[in-house]
Image 1: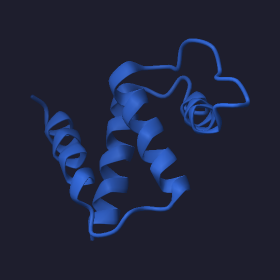
Image 2 (image 1 turned 45 degrees about the horizontal axis):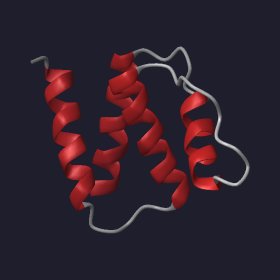
Image 3 (image 1 turned 30 degrees about the horizontal axis):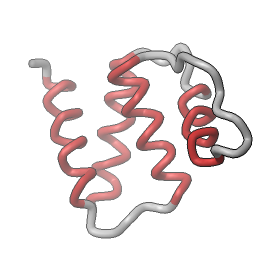
Length: 85
């Protein structure tokens, strides 16, 4: 396991025990970076207007299209570390 993979895995665990709940924009950033890191570019159809949460998640993830898994892992770990204090 590379240093980046270990850091990403540790950040994923730390994200579950943050001192306080992040705001919605930060939660969307965490979600989209995690998905980009683990699954790559968003796929499938955009959820309909009645699924506002699903639509927001899809849109946030879609904005990261083309970002490498390594970049997403690094940004995710940076964000979690900044939130953990």
